[in-house]
Length: 188
Image (cartoon, rainbow, N blue to C red; front, side, top):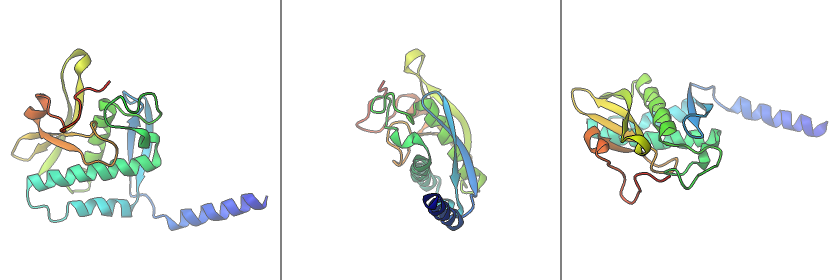
């Protein structure tokens, strides 16, 4: 009984010391969005992300901030879900709970981009629909941004481990197979 009382006191202390959630985002994992989880972001988490967008002077600088923000948001989600087991591509995490394919990544990245947009942190871009490249067995999905008055960009988080900045390519380059140096296009 004493152990239960101590656990309750410690749990209550942790709960009281934790700021209320400011945002929740539903993410998916285990390939093709088989499993869902809700990730919570408190005001301190969001303040860290917001700082990335402070005084961003150009669309290019904003895309760089988006890339870093995706890394931070994925890392935060990994602390709350089994997605910490995800590894870039589809081989190094085969069969583990928390793995993500490009469908999971493009869906989650789109949800995180929507969070940025909802909070007014995207001044030069708006969130667009997910996009796919390839056919049959070589299909790959990415999230998408539209530069206001300019081109479309693909935000791809699939190639690298959680916490890594996203790769962002002009839509046409991405459709032609762009990927980070040293990564395989399709690692199944």
